Image (cartoon, rainbow, N blue to C red; front, side, top):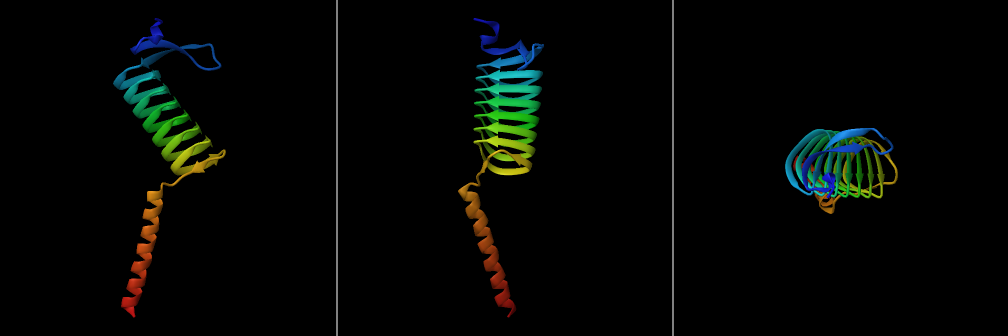
Amino acid sequence: MHESDRPGVHPTVYRQPGGNVPTEATAVRDLPVDRVEGQTIIVEGSRVDQLTGQRVTLERSNAQRVEGRSVQADRSAIRHLEADRAVALRSALAVARVRELRAARARIGLLRADRVEIEQGNVAIALVRDLAGPALLRVPLGFLLAFAGGILAGLALSFGIRKQRR
């Protein structure tokens, strides 16, 4: 078994796509972990409560909270994401606060971003300055019903107050 294939948390060497410069990284593989910190973190098939690093890569993993300058998630789930740049491929993000996000076939609950590019993705609620690409923004039915109920209650209250004045 190759060293990078064994389960656990261990140092490894990472080569960025398109580059030949090896970079030291922390690898987490097939293991539940509470907290991982480092410059470059690679997580595969694991569950992590908190990840903090400059460059974070998740593949087939779950994370409660991820903080990083650059985050890439492939077939992963993240409850809370904070990053400068993020890429989500076939992943689910509950809450994401990023400067730039590129998502393909991803599901996002609450998104706050400056620039977003989405391909075949679903976003429930988005606060975005610049949205690029075809996107489907969905609002849950419960939210729409609550919003409509609030409008109707406001109108009913307004009419009730007007009748009392007359």
